[in-house]
Image 1 (cartoon, rainbow, N blue to C red):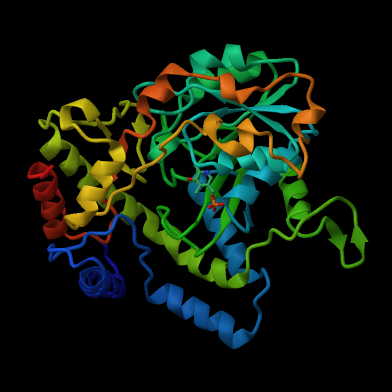
Image 2 (image 1 turned 180 degrees about the horizontal axis):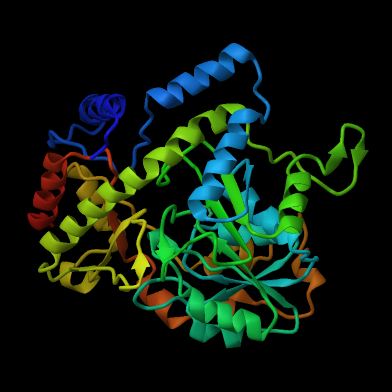
Length: 418
Ligand SMILES: *Cc1c(COP(=O)(O)O)cnc(C)c1O
């Protein structure tokens, strides 16, 4: 599955030594009886990454330099955009995108209700107000039929998330955005390599945002990147990520230090080369899990629309909690005790988080105070997200797993002992 010999070595090290170490510590701590532990995510780092890191250490040049630039070029090529601008993480990628698009305090951004919190806190970081849309009942991404309800005279952008690696319905979102003159920022932090009707995610909206956090499809340790075809947006993000400095002596805008360090770029560049192999293996494992667990009455493999390439950040299953007689959290916990680590998110719709319900902004109710509408999130109850939240489970499907480990996952889930 992975052609490079050095990677295979690392993979087997990770698979053999790491689970044993975890098992030993689990034994000591809880005294549990499983002899296996299959983890849900593991970074795979090979010889090229190590050599690159050593080059940086030897050169003493840690600040954003040639390896970050190489990483940016490769990522722009991979996604098919004119520009890719590396930043410190996926959250700052979103914040700077909204900033570069010209959003002002109190402007509204429509976000889906089922996603990682920082999709929406990044909106608040840009002093804007998140407006929560329901999700598609089948693919869990932003429900385009709910956009009309979310629209106001302050709406400036839509922020669809390609959740678990499945692209959002971009055609529908694009036509709504065009009709109402809204920008689209894609949150592709879970969808490296996914595509929608042949177009790579990150190249469809005005701007695309990726994260390279340790558990994502590929990693730089911590890191993010913005993709765009727009020269002005790209220029503005380059300024904003580095103190708004046009040169050594001049601060021309309210910038930040959101640069990517050369050490992170050193890891990222070879990771881009590995991504197609990683995603092939993720797909192979996920399709096998879907096929072999499909007949169980308590789990339902997530829908995959036939015009997308799924990045399978997750192998997502929806639980029938009535059929199994347990909550999502209980299933997650029991599977872990039996040696299968799973993902179990997101437990609540995002509009229930205190940061939003209590309008906890900049130690005040800003940016909500900069907007004339109520935004009483506590009153929201959106049917699809309420039906799904807390009921999704992601089984291990990362490319470091061998077939025997996948067998173990299947056996454990099939023989699930409630
Ligand atoms: C991981 C993630 C982010 C944030 O990326 P970081 O690099 O952790 O800041 C944003 N949105 C989604 C959907 C994510 O999964």
